[in-house]
Image: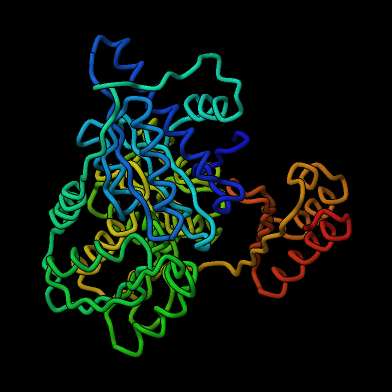
Length: 455
């Protein structure tokens, strides 16, 4: 990870950590960089960059700043307006754009924002590009970037038609009619608000929606995949068959069964992995997870004879492993689920469609899909600190972690890691009881606090 770009783009508080000036400079660099690449490949044409954004108020400011920078460097900017991260990924590849940009801070509060970069294949941009961008932001990029003049100045293109084609693509993936199903959607007042209902309605579902009135300030506020209690009530009170909750940019999805039980990303990986194996379609008989997945998932996979691997946290790392090893299913406990046959990034709406497909194919209620999976109790505490590296290298913190590992043995685990997007240390314990989880988590957190690292 660099100074600005973490595991999921350049993210921070709008006009504090991430400013309009940053966005303008990123646009200036990308417009020049991809324009030069085209010239080197003998193509005398402008770079084409696709931009989408979520519903937070600052997204408009960053969109206009990026567009100004891109056009000033001679690139053409195509605007999807409010849309999802996976739609930008899909269309960047489908329509041959040089680069895709998504303006979003995902599940973070409205006052944060972020800039995610995607390569021409719709995949998260690798560090070779983000390192160059960071060099330009810090003034150490070796070449001066000239301003385009005359006919070489870039233009903006309204590309909302692309978003409609993405909706059509999702609808085309429906292998069953959803007629007769009562489905709830929590759109988090974010990117899914104008897309998800249209897809489920087209497939025949009776669709019920909450948190689909974005005002620029209410994205993720007591809504969506990070606040799923609202959807739980909504599903049970309205006797729905299943409910789906998205995050701000709709690249993740969690579900709620008809009884109000939450189906996490691990539940979804189990359900879809088991289903694909039974159909003979689970490539390499392996599901790709991250180190955050629950021990219970692995024990269930062992019983089913399904293999698994663990990557670093971030759907970027999950996809990279899947691409290199030919896997078809992977994801995170938080709800980033990747079906590589259909997408190169987590896609919350796609995930909800595939889970509904399993329900209909097996003719089971949502609550029956996860039978055979027993999730271990888990406690996760996020500790804001001044220096993540100082915490991770402190001998007393290391000892507290080692002591917890020794106590847990094979009946649990502890994971302490740096957040890739925030100044946070995440302390997670899984064990056979909530009491053990709470006690060991507090033990490690108390050492971090005692050493004066918290802010």
